[in-house]
Image 1 (cartoon, rainbow, N blue to C red):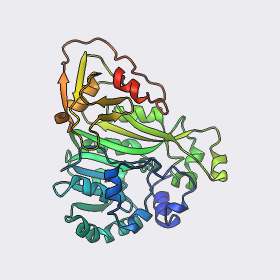
Image 2 (cartoon, rainbow, N blue to C red; image 1 turned 90 degrees about the vertical axis):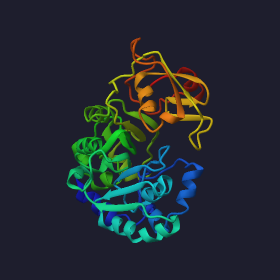
Image 3 (cartoon, helix red, strand yellow; image 1 turned 60 degrees about the vertical axis):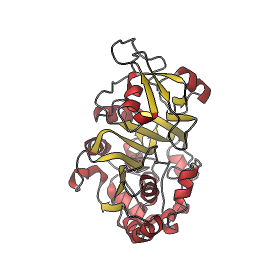
Length: 350
């Protein structure tokens, strides 16, 4: 199954989110106030053609350069445009002409509403980002919302994303994963593919591929099981379990394959807007303001060598190694998040 099916399904078959047969391409969690306010400034036609499985707006975005892979009608791009402000920029890449037409048709409308213009859209295949006029190492953040599952060569997407990110940058994206590999006959099903089901990576393959592409320690932010409401489609995938999951992958040369313990800790200053009491790096790290929070070496770098550094105090270095960090596991991560109280006291890694 390839890009042609995606173009057909999202350009011709689907005319709005109400046409979807599963909730794979829907966002179910309630967005924070800042995102709700930004969404209220997005044109109705743009939001009406939105197909995403999560929120792709990480923290500390002011002035950032962001690449949106599979930007569709432009909803995420126009939300992020407001969050990065006039000193930032958003570049959206999509392969479906009908979706790009909607996104581009409302550029002037959004620029007038925001008071600045910082969004551009490019037609292209996210498997072939090297064919586009994008400068290596020029983006602080890359986002994608339920799109990577639609492409055949997922490794190429992660390889090119790593090339385009600045050191210390990250991919923050939502997508669909399975608890096992999907057989080829299901991968060829046009509806299951278009609904973001049969192109789902087995989570273990995702973990391996992203590490091989330079993202040494993928971090799960949150996840949910998918619901397939259409009985005909559900019957095709009986026995398989699928999950919508949001990950963050950092481009940091010093990251290790596993979470190693160097006796380090951080103290959160409480200075990230909307997260004054606690900062959630991922689903195993809810770091309360003012509290000494033990972390592994990888988490230490994810906070110290990125845009988050100014919001933390750092304790320790890499001079003494104490072995693997307690709680570092390799089982399927979905649905295994530690409760917030335990996160805040244990400092357990993923």
